[in-house]
Every structure is written in structure tokens, then in C-alpha cells.
Amino acid sequence: MRNVGQRAVPFSLAACVGVVLMLSGCTTAAPTPTPTLSVSLTPTATPTPTPTGPALMPNGSATQNLPYFTSIVDAVASGPQAAQGRAYIDALTAGGFDKSAMEVTQDLTTVGNQADSIQFSVKWKGECLVGQVGPSVPGPQARVLPLVPEGTCLVGQTRPIDW
Image (tube, rainbow, N blue to C red; front, top):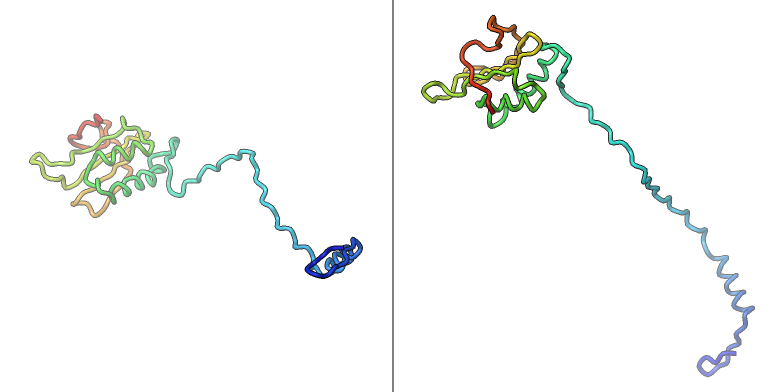
């Protein structure tokens, strides 16, 4: 017996078991277990992104590479260095074209004014990818042209690509 306050309360194991059994009938169903996240520690290959635009085709013709050449020209022409021949040469080189096969005209006239247009080119398998930009041109231009008789792409004096 237990003494609670002033009264004696009988305490029996049978009574406790009965109360527990009675209360256990009042419980609801056990909750459905939440699925656990399984994490694999096995390394997986990272997928290679698929180019979304034109790409350099090393075995392709000049005509097949014109869309890629044009995309590079357009990108530079829309940027802050649109009037700088070096920017086109650097971008074409970064795009995979051979710098030693390139030509570019001067950015400035002989009196130091901005040139009316800048031409640049890449010799490609006996043909030329030629670009032209500047205030006298209605937007960036890109074409495939034949080599000139001297074996170059541009007529007239070009500047050395020595950077």
C-alpha cells in the first residue's frame, strides 16, 4: 500500500497491467513510416554538355565552319571591343582557329582616326573565312571567299599578329 496524503491507496501490479491494457486499446494505428533518402556514395560520370550553337568542325570545310566563325564575330561585335581587330583575333583563337592562319587590318587610319572598317580572316583548307566590322558596314559581316592570287585572304596591307 501507498500512503497518498491521508489515505492509504492499494497498489497492485494487476491493477497497473489492467489500466495499461485498457489504455492501449484507445491508441490509434501507428503512423506510416516516412521513406528514407538513400544516398549512393558511388561516383558517377558527369555528363558532357551538348553545344547549343554552332561548333568548330576541324575536318569541315570553310563553308561548314562559317556559322561558328559568324557566331564569334557577332559576339565580339556586340561587346565593348567591337572596333578592335585584336579582339576578333583573340576570340577566334580562343574558339579554336589557328592564329598563324589569320590576318587583320589596322584599327586606325594613318592619321589616327578610327578605321571605317576592320577586316580579319582565317585561311581554312584553301579558302578564307573573312569578317568585316566598322561604322561603314551595316553590321558584322562574315563570308567564305577564295584565296587571293598571292595566297592570302585580305588584299592590301595587314598588321602583324605578334601577340
